Image 1 (tube, helix red, strand yellow):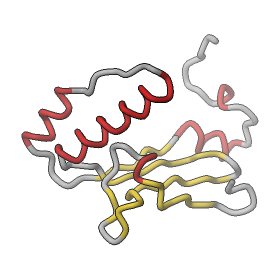
Image 2 (image 1 turned 30 degrees about the horizontal axis):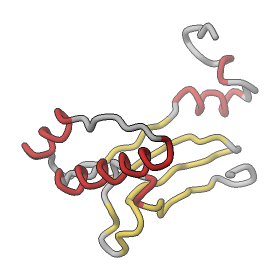
Image 3 (image 1 turned 135 degrees about the horizontal axis):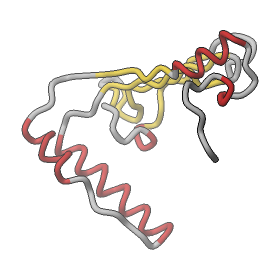
Length: 121
C-alpha cells in the first residue's frame, strides 16, 4: 500500500479501533487513519474516545469475543476508565514514525540502518 503514491487508509471499522471515537455520521466507523508512503506505515492518527461508558462497553465486548475465540480474558484498565469518568477533553493525536521517515529520506533498506541506538534481537 502506498508504493507508487502515498495512501491514506481511513474509515476503520469501529471494532478495530478500540480507543477511537466513532464517526458521528456513521458509527460503524471510527475517526482513525493511517498514512502509507513507499509501502511503509508512516503515521497513525485518531480522535480519542472520551466516553467512559462506551469504552467500558467496548472493553466488555472485546473480552467476550476473546473469551469465545481463545478461552482467555484480561482485566480492563480500571485506572484508565476512572480517568475517563473524571473527564477527558475532546482530543486527537498522530504518531509519526520519525525513524521510518528518516529511512525513506535516506533510502535505507532496513529500519535498523537509521536507529540512533542499536537494537539487539
